Length: 406
Image: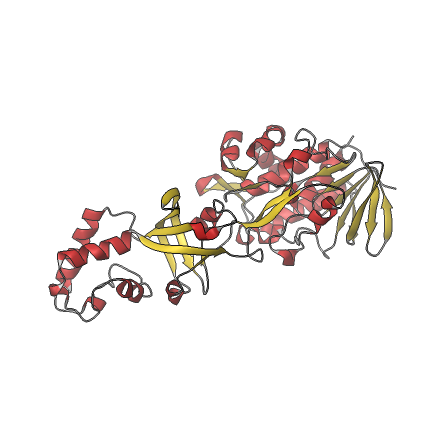
């Protein structure tokens, strides 16, 4: 028998196991993958955006789902404490644009290494197996049933099995099933921080194009609900990039109610852009319209913009009217696309939905339904914007859960 079983060897599971072991508990950490931290290794494009070096209020502001639940966990273990926690383990960190925190090495592997080293020092037992059920009696935890190694007894379990995003890393929704089998309500899981598919297929003719520093607006029923400046990437069947995945967090389960508006030239107001176009038109006065936009747009975007306009490709630039120029400006400043769907879990950064926060005590992370059952990380109905906020949620809830094991 062990004092505590932690289910899931991701960032939340490792932090929870470490904190509980440091308090003198005998801890067994169960991970179904061959190695720990498989999803951690791909976070931040392999660089691992550990947190956002900002105060509690900034984190609460960026948590989209159930921010109020996080007050207690963040008050105990905020971004500043997380920063010095890792530096104290010998991992040098750095703060980049937007207060994003990364290891100085830019290697997520180094984050995993220091966590594994600490788990070894704390004598946490690592078991490679799959949990098929959490065993209970009279609403109290008794242990777990493993797929290959039978039953493992313990009177406390921390469920940190992740969500449904990037299922190839092991976050396949199995944690939701374990909790649901014990009577917990599961808020319907949805992809979060993901790409967006549009009804218009023409945009994908520019696949592979990265649009630098454009403005993206998200409209719902014609009303703007979000805007952000940044980079946008056009894939073969969906839109991607930081501003797109941020916008995806504000889209509910009816994506077709939403529309995107892209400003390809946000640094120029209408009048300044008009003057810029006039200069280009003067430069290319005797050329076809289709050959006059090379100084203004990436090559892949030019035919798409021309097709959306009513200006003939072979119209000589010096024949273009003021009305046609106004139409071009509107296209460049307000390119509209209708959303069809969100990209699925296979590329989503986080999972929205999960175990209802109403059934978890935020001061201990213990279940309100089952004594001795605790939760941490993405398995809970918590999700935030990009910038390190989601990993902070994982570490803070795990720290809280691990410290609650007496």
